[in-house]
Length: 399
Ligand SMILES: Cc1cc2nc3c(=O)[nH]c(=O)nc-3n(C[C@H](O)[C@H](O)[C@H](O)COP(=O)(O)OP(=O)(O)OC[C@H]3O[C@@H](n4cnc5c(N)ncnc54)[C@H](O)[C@@H]3O)c2cc1C
Image (cartoon, rainbow, N blue to C red; front, side, top):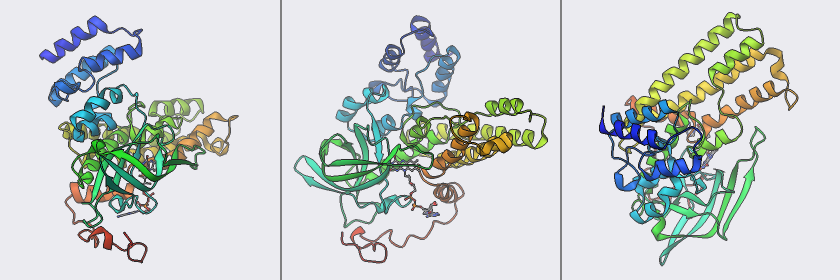
C-alpha cells in the first residue's frame, strides 16, 4: 500500500462521516491537499503521479467521501494552475476549488465560433490595464459571473492565432452589458455580452502576451474532458456544467430500463436491443474517458477528449430517441401534466447542446482526423496572413 493511500485512509478515519458539514469538509479536503492530488504541494495538491492519484481517489470513492478530482475536471482552476501567475493563483485558486467564484467563458463571437482564431474583440494596453471592446455571444452563465475567461486580440498585425491574449476579465463593471438569449428548450442560460471600454488589469493576463491561443487549448481540453464524461455529476465548470444545471442531468441507462418496465416494454426486442446498444456506447465512452484522463494528467491537452465529447453527444441523441421509443405515442405529449414525456422532449432537445457547445461535432471530427488519425489538415488560406488583412464576409478587414 502506498504512503498516499495510507494517509488518505487515516485522513478519512479521522475526519469523514456522511453527516459532516459539506462546506467544512470541502475546505479541509482542499487545504490538506486531497482535492487536486496531481498538483504540486504548494498549490493544494500532493504531487502524486496518475496511478497513485487513482488509488487515493478510489479510497475516497469507497468511503463515499467527495472531494478529489478537481485536477482533472475543474476547468477554471485547471486553467489557472496551467497558465496563471503565482499572484493570480494565490488570489483565485482556493475560491475556485471551493466554487466561490462564478465564472463564464468569453470566447465565441458572432463571426467566430468554430473558427475561434477569427475573434475581433480587441484589447489595447493603457498603463497597467487593458481596455477591451467587442461582442461575445452564447456566453453561458454571464449574468451571474464574477469573472470571464476572455480571449481578445492584442496584435492585429500578427497572423490570426498569434495575436490573441487570454485574460481573467472582471464582469461586474460598467461597460459590460449582458443580454439573455432563449434556447429551444425554453431556458435562457446563455447570453450576448457587449463590452464597451471594459477594463482588465495587466496582472490578470494568463500566459504570454499574444500567446493566448495556447492557454485556450488547455482550457478547451479541460472543457471537452468534462463534457465527454457521461457519468459525472454537476459542478465541473464550463459550458458543460451549465448544460447540467439547465434541469436534467443526462438520463442514465438504468432509469430507461425502469421506464421500459413501467411501460410494459421490457420484453420488446427492439427496446432491449436499443438499451444494450446504449449501455455498450456508454461503457466504451467511460473507457475512453479513462484514457483521456491519463493523457491529461500532466496538465496538457489531448485529442482523445474530442473523441469522448463527440461520443457523448451521440449517446445523448441516441438516449433521447430510445426514451421516445419506449414512451411510444406518449412521447408526443408535453407540459407539466406529462412529466415523463416533457423530460424526454427536454432531453432530446438538450442533446443538441452537446453537439454544439465546446466545439461542434464536426469540429471534433476534424480534430480526431488530424490529431488522432494523422489525416492531412484542412486548408486554411488565412493562417499566415496578418489578421488585419483577413477579409470579412467578402470585404477587406478594417482592423
Ligand atoms: C448551449 C450552448 C452554450 C454555449 N456556451 C458558450 C460559452 O459559455 N462561451 C462561449 O464562448 N461559447 C459558448 N457556446 C458557443 C459554442 O462554442 C459555439 O456555438 C460553437 O463553437 C459553434 O460556433 P458557431 O455557433 O459560431 O457555429 P459556426 O462556427 O458558424 O458553425 C456552423 C456550422 O458549420 C460547421 N462548421 C464550421 N466550421 C467547420 C469546419 N471547419 N469543418 C466542418 N464543419 C464546420 C459547424 O460544425 C456548424 O455545424 C455555447 C453554445 C451552446 C449551444
